Length: 342
Ligand code: 5AD
Ligand code: FES
Image (cartoon, rainbow, N blue to C red; front, side, top):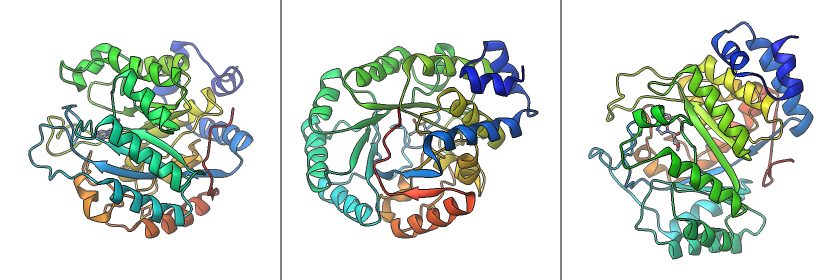
């Protein structure tokens, strides 16, 4: 049987079959068409928005690929106060956003109580909005408090499910085991969870990507964030090539076929390596976009990689621009929380 049809029907393939799909471009059209069929059968033409608030670029970690790693002395650091965060939410809410993603480096100067207070304030002002946290690896007890404060979702990309590859991307203080554990804890606590990885990160093999698929099958996340690796000038990977558009799109389609219900963002990184990257992502199975609601003056300081898009845009302009782009791609932005459909 045709591999794409088999994947669509079984939502799974053997390792060898996945490798074959990953290694050739011959199935790309069929993959994209099948993925779009599946996405439309579950989500119609709906695209969900997440308003991303990058509230701190301080980070205690030193992931080798990341532009805001703690050891990078060339970054001008900033933190948003609760009031500044609420200001972003206010503008976002008026633009139709019903999910706010609070993302930051692992900045321990915000206590659990402060994070909870921020979450409670947002939920009180905008009870019909979902709050997503993306603040890295924390203790079970901290996650529990965030949930109790009203946080609905948590994004924590696993980055790679293969230990040896994880070691190439991270210093020795960090471990894949701990990161996976965090994801399982978050699930157990009842968060809607997002995992994910970069495509084409240094040292990544197709076998690693198959291992990512297997890990995702085990975790069963509600969201899977994938985007191309893009080198940052202040990292040891500055001379490494960026991940490819074609492979990222191929993986998006495979993921849509494996996980028909999953929330799949067309990421900013995808829009950075190609001018129409996010549109192509939507056409390949993605159903979420995450524009920036952070204050314009800080955007450039949250550069995880070089040449990041939308660093000079007002939230309102970005919203309008996306409206047009999503429509032109054949989809429609809806202003609701955009919960996973199971
Ligand atoms: N290129 C692409 N994505 C990156 N991220 C971090 N650094 C880079 C980079 N250089 C991704 C990581 C992280 C997410 C917030 O951004 O996967 O989890
Ligand atoms: Fe930000 Fe187009 S999406 S300006």
